[in-house]
Length: 380
Image (cartoon, rainbow, N blue to C red; front, side):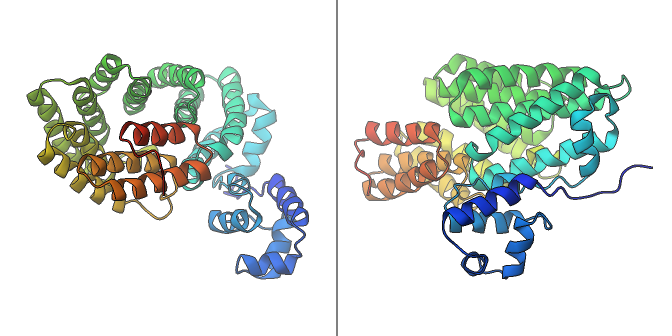
């Protein structure tokens, strides 16, 4: 009989909460008042008797100036928690419940990264990757296909976190492993995702030919989900616009991205693709028009329209995410190109605030370089 679903209470959370509270000189009652909860809840959290929600952990982080450390320990592992803890130290006893627990845990980390950025969760994700890699070595033959599929998803997320942190070598390594494992698992959607993220990596190092080729290759398989192919087409269009390609070629690719994004609304996608929303695609297409808008005012007007809609559509939970900060940079550039220096400074400032809050050097670099290039180095 499979183990019943449970929730992991991480003892590290309890210990860290007590340490931080005592270091700040707060009583249980004072901390409870600061987060608008009862004293008994804080006591239960410190005793390891209650699993905190992400909302409560975020409030505690803010009250204790913990920079997301507590929220990083509050990720739910909704399936088979006790079994997962056992399998972590007994790789040869891996079963399906443990693998699904790892998949559920990854889904929680993805959502948490939206809320607090990549920095606080990079360490915990690395520790879980060690477990996943060990399971790959020791998993029974009948379990390996599912293990390697989940491992590929963890590796892809590690690659994404490394990109967000500006860790080029780590991103390259994890993306390569993710591509290998996703290919072995036959997960064509994940293969396309990894290729597209490698294209994004190429964009950040200004390797536009690689960006374009990887984006094109990642949507070559028409069985891949339309949302993924829409993202890849949009990324290729941006690469073409950045490289000064013929306007007809850029617009053709952009039209394909628009058609695929409309089609995607009718197709289900795995949980690790939840971010492909109408707002997301508005921002992506707006970023293409932003590059075209450097020399065409009408294109720039279209960029501002799409980017404003996309930025406004982000959820409150993700409004402090690093990727949202990058979207704000696109909007600020388009605003500056339209002559709106004051609006651009304000938008750059919001992006910079996210960079500071998430300790993202990569986002901070993008803000600084874009503002300086536009002669807007002085932030409000």
